[in-house]
Image 1 (cartoon, rainbow, N blue to C red):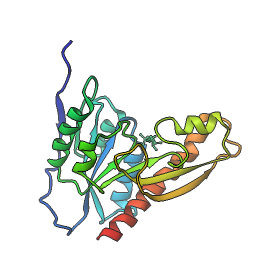
Image 2 (cartoon, helix red, strand yellow):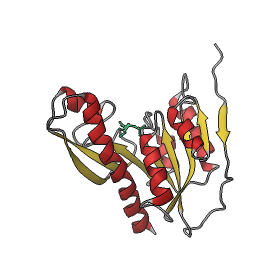
Image 3 (cartoon, rainbow, N blue to C red):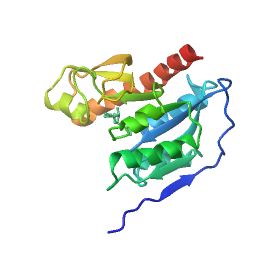
Length: 214
Ligand code: GAR
């Protein structure tokens, strides 16, 4: 079987020259799925708390069929993808780093990017990778946090935004916000409440980080 290793890229706006700390911070948003967090960030850049502070350099996916890529392209954002299927983690990450570097990102923003990052990736962007997680990363790491909250009828979850280090959801926490789950009697309702908080908290936390590092 031949592996599909093709890079797909659309780039309606060519990368800006390096800003040298002046001008909006360039975000590379990485996703694997529908991209609701990406859309919320794009809206925050367009008219919300990130307006004038950040711009989206590229939306990248490890799945060329991810719905979030189409959504980004519809907004006119540059997109790129490379399938991770059948690829060795380090080798794949090395290629992704090279692709992303072509867009000169200041920050890598994980928004439902369902990959464990290898040290190759983390070291390439050390201290500049941000993730959002649907639970307290001290309590629950990895996938299926909403499912876990629902299955165990937890009274709340704590959305966490953190810097990414070489561990699985172990990096320094930037912000957390509690989501009240009482009375949420379907998984869809748990996710609805959680995502509503994610969409606000992510943009607000990135804003604080950019202001702090300005
Ligand atoms: C979000 O709930 C995000 O917190 C989660 O994936 C979802 C992506 O949704 N991330 C993780 O679980 C990372 N461990 P989206 O594609 O609609 O933004």
